[in-house]
Image (cartoon, rainbow, N blue to C red; front, side, top):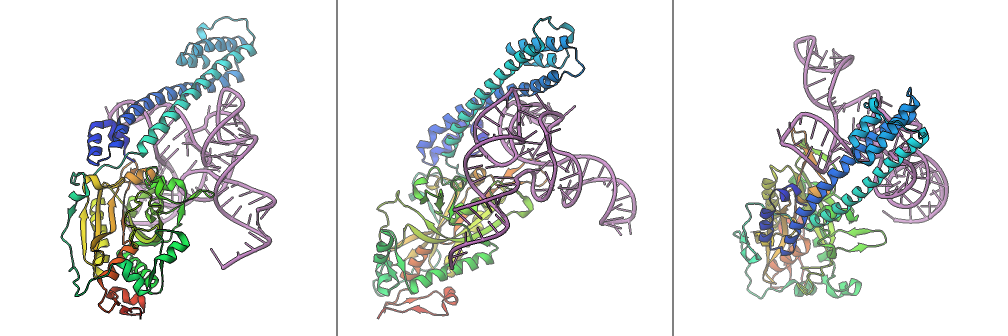
Length: 474
RNA sequence: GGAGAGGUGGCCGAGUGGUUGAAGGCAACGGUCUUGAAAACCGUCGUGCCCGCAAGGGUACCGCAGGUUCGAAUCCUGUCCUCUCCGCCA
């Protein structure tokens, strides 16, 4: 979520930023937000002022009714006068009357004490009703405002190049040699089944399209990759987490998946639990509603989880192979930082992701996203891609984002800046390290041999009993 | 799944329907004292929202949501969660 103060201060600037994001539908919400924000503050003032008067008068009423040491005529006089003042809306005067600061000119009245007090009570009740009305209006406007705020994307960092299409993304010089073959390298959807380690039919039989079964070396290789990543991340100072694979709805809002990406997640409707589309959702909310100490920042976390995505939006794309499934394994790196350090942390996070590819001897390159390709919650984003020789494409294996306070504001993760009296939102960063199936693709395709076997990267061998190659199926 | 107990500030723990944002204690922070430290003593010590340049003022929050009442941490209803015992289970 954005800071509403920013929108209040310069809505036109915010709108220009959103135009750069190529998110036309969000644009209209800015004007709506400005309008609702004004309405909200006006209503809040009315409500709170009324409540302040009410609090005072109720207290005074209690004492008056107790009537300790007061002449009955005074009580009646005060009650009658106060009732009139309340009904004319002059609450300050009513308060001075009730508290006896105007006993000098109390009206004469022949109503009984009980009647006088009951009349005043009626007037106070009417104030209460008016307060309820105002409070309901505030709640209503609040809800509308919230809804609009939740649909606004994060704004790009000033260093991000303005561009509308992913074709304008900045591509860094690739590292590593693209492998060369003296035969035609197979794509993994042919190679995997040929090796007997990847079974598409079995996946379809069990769960339908976009599911697959890994077996033997395939399953082992995946497990090895996960262990290898986690060990690497631990060496870089990340604390390993094991988290629930399903979470409450609020967590999806906290991580800025909802409301916009509701259609990508799976739901257990009975239990009202949602399956993680990424571990990022769980980790973002790890410190939800907490106020952290600046001395504890930055916090680095890493977690391996399966990720479940309905992929309705991507129907028809990447239907071959294991590049885009409904269920896949991912190791996610995550950082909670101060605003001052978050961009330096983004660089090191991206480097950490690239390091994984380097250690696996995969050709790797970094992309810097232009504004139009940033997505919903990133203020700045790097993608990491590795080359896959069989399908002849650069596969996105990591996406490293600084969301600044966008998620932190939703999940209410704050900290006390050193020596400050006010809390501040932390900045959060996330980066895959790395999407397992796609790395699997690259390893298989790049390391395939003429005889149909596949060489295992040296870095993975310790995790596979020292074996050097996946043998061809005889 | 059955039975019971309970949810109050960073933690522990009081709280009769009206000077309670909430006693007391611990922790933390600042200070006095001390060669230094400890102890002792004094002080500070929640968050959101609204107004304000600020100082400050107002308001809300005692799991959550409703209700009763002129007025609710306190009474009522619902709900969620935690704990204990039993059953079942990897």
